[in-house]
Image (tube, rainbow, N blue to C red; front, side, top):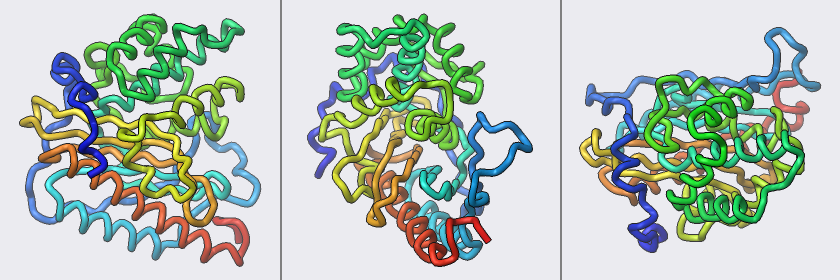
Length: 315
């Protein structure tokens, strides 16, 4: 199994896990509630501003409904919980399932720290220095917690972390700040916002620094490159994952995957899958991969079906 090769040292250390404050475990009330998907507006677009050329992207109503029902059924089957947010960059077609629900982030938040460091370097008009690049390579490529500590100190600890997130248009962390460099919770929509800042140029980061971030995301160790990469068909997924047994959730696992993939249709998708309550690491990995493949496949089919009528969302 792909995840069997992950060394125990790669799992978040005990103090970090204890510092994270996950949402309460989902009560077993029978059939899960249905969720309404949403089309995401970038936070930098002012309310009431003109829509992009070609109209707002929208999935067909039957696609949305079928996809929600399929995800509801899967959620009822597994011993765990999940949310997802996806956008296809060319058309802007997007889908969210429980995308505002809070989940324990684990190591996906290391991408926040790296992005904030890059914004600070950009403001100073310099590239990352050798020490910073070494820390970033370890923190992103190998999910090294000590390296993430080093990056966190360089951005100014909690003050720099919050200021950087504000610049990126991310939801205010406020009382969601966890121990060390962690967030107590995050959402799939928030993860997608960060990915859009890097891949869609929506935000304050210049192209040179976005490319630097992508370089680290494309060099993740193979044993940690599971998750949204299951929906990638080009072998070039760029991603950051996170996984942690949550003490306050009975030791059940939070397993998350976020990144950029190119699907069978040749289109580029940004995908964020957050999950929790899994009895083991492997079942969490399976969940992130199943959800990513299901949603990307449905979006690709819908875009292809609408293509004869023009860009998705056009008349």
